[in-house]
Length: 561
Image (cartoon, rainbow, N blue to C red; front, side, top):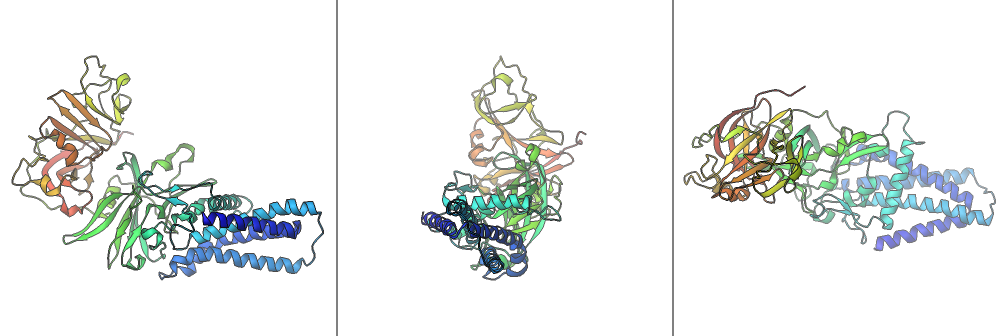
């Protein structure tokens, strides 16, 4: 509130001042502001990255001081030169001075205050500035940044400044060589200045900057079939390795979803996306392991705690926003805490992204368990059927959706087989590059989630948060995407092709402990061979997983042309 009032008064005061100085002076000042702002944005990144970011305490102020300093120095220099070469001013009618001079003064004030606000927003300080927050993350927004008070004076001024210079960078101020415009290479400067840049731990007091030597890009991956925990499919992932010099003063590293952005330049702007998932490295007595999480609350941060050596973080982005019809484009850049970096060509190996998330890109090694039983072929098989359920296109229960005779998303409970069903829905959708595998879970199955085996007690060791995962001969992990519960006691079926409230966990599957069985479903690419089934709590290191059983399931075939 205080910032909004202060900014409004300053803008009005500046506009009145230049109106009183006359149209010619107001015009000269407006031209100087425009040129000084263009120079500031053009030199902002080269100066900051090339001269100011050194890994020290000043880094937190480098971006803001650089932008504000260049703008003010350029503005004063231009005014000095213009005033020197134009000592005399032409006389204008009073009405022209007050009207047109006032408009030009208002534009100058809006651009000047917009640049200063963006600069101040890039200083490492509290996320709240004199009552103004700008943007925030919350559980209601599923951890994604949302704008507060978009019509407040600071938001309007920063948005106007961003739009003005975005237009100039693509028009009369466009670069002579290349297409590196402000709109496409530095999108969202108003949002970053609004508070996204400062959205760090401890209400913005964590480390908000990085030096170019503080981390490296270890890999860039793309998998159009990767299953995200919010139920969507398709992802990009960036594997980053952070050095101790990038850690906070307390000896730990933190990164919020607001401080990372994947960028795909397009004509007139860019497609940008914040990460929705991440995995972070944890060191245990058994060695290194990556643990997967979601950016789904305001307290979700990727962290590396008390490390004395490099640590890895893998950021996962939904790929769908980059494939939106006419505006589709492939991401080529990423910004991390203000620092923009070019990305390598994405690794399109169908299994590489999963390895990056689960084990920092290296092959996953799971210790053999000689006590693990063999899972028979009839309990782990390739099968996309509905496990005996009959469905019709015109009477799909719950939120289930179909396409071409196959259901592909949604959920439905307490379904009963209808004799009148046309059975024009026959299976779960599987595309031409993969097959669906079903793992049978019941009190009588080898996959024991109910501690029937009193000696091994795998479910008791791992806990209710354990998720049954498949492991192939190369060490790649496969998480379930859905399940079908067949309950013959009351002749009901339950289908989930999206994550239920408790996820695909032991807790969710307790419903089948004394009633029927569950067919847990996985999507497997052609050419893999499943060798074991493990139970793992995704919030804990992979070394804490236990082997439910060994298996031999080959997925043969090849993709259709």
